[in-house]
Amino acid sequence: MGFEVFPAIDLMGTFVFAVSGALAAIDRQLDIFGVFVVAFVTACGGGVIRDLCIGALPPAGLINIEYLVVIALAVALAAFFQHLLLRLAQPTLFFDAVGLGFFAAFGAHKVYTHVPDVELSLLLGVITAVGGGIIRDVLLGRVPVVLTKEIYASAALLGATIQVLGDLHWIDHRFSPWAAIALCTLIRMLSLKYQWNLPAIKKSS
Image 1 (cartoon, rainbow, N blue to C red):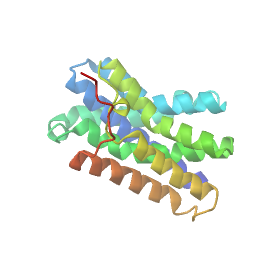
Image 2 (cartoon, rainbow, N blue to C red; image 1 turned 45 degrees about the vertical axis):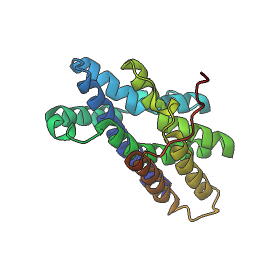
Image 3 (spheres, helix red, strand yellow; image 1 turned 90 degrees about the horizontal axis):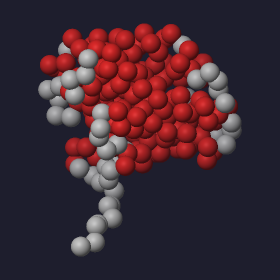
Image 4 (tube, rainbow, N blue to C red; image 1 turned 60 degrees about the vertical axis):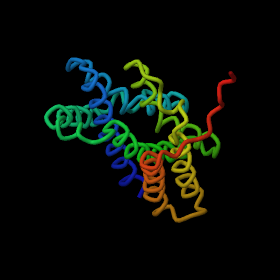
């Protein structure tokens, strides 16, 4: 299962996050090189950080041609259908929400297969999911979503937790990645729709 399912999950997450990055870059009116760079770091940034931390070198995102192909397709899609995609209320956040679940599940699973430590798997699962978005937002001069009061990293943590429970065989490992993806994405989508937020520390007057 792991050999067949998780690479597909990884590539699906890569595609969705690349679309998110490309749309954000297009919205900022970057040139084609800038759009591709932002799409690439959004899609691969978190995974590169994860692979460096667990010693999976060189990082998969920097050597596997499949990632470049998927990212190029995502950039083309974003470029040719930008008028349709940008009609979404928050297109970058929408595609972010979808990619979040894929990368939280894949990231946690990959870490656990390399270093079977629960805490590290949860931490790097979250970093896989949010790392690329942080780099994207920094490059585009925005406060990263993960640092605001929105429910973002906590949704990724839920997805990573479900996947690790599957890797531990506490729940059915055939079911865990899809449950992780579905619940993580659902929580993020609902938080956007209903404006659920974590409490903020109010600035004293």
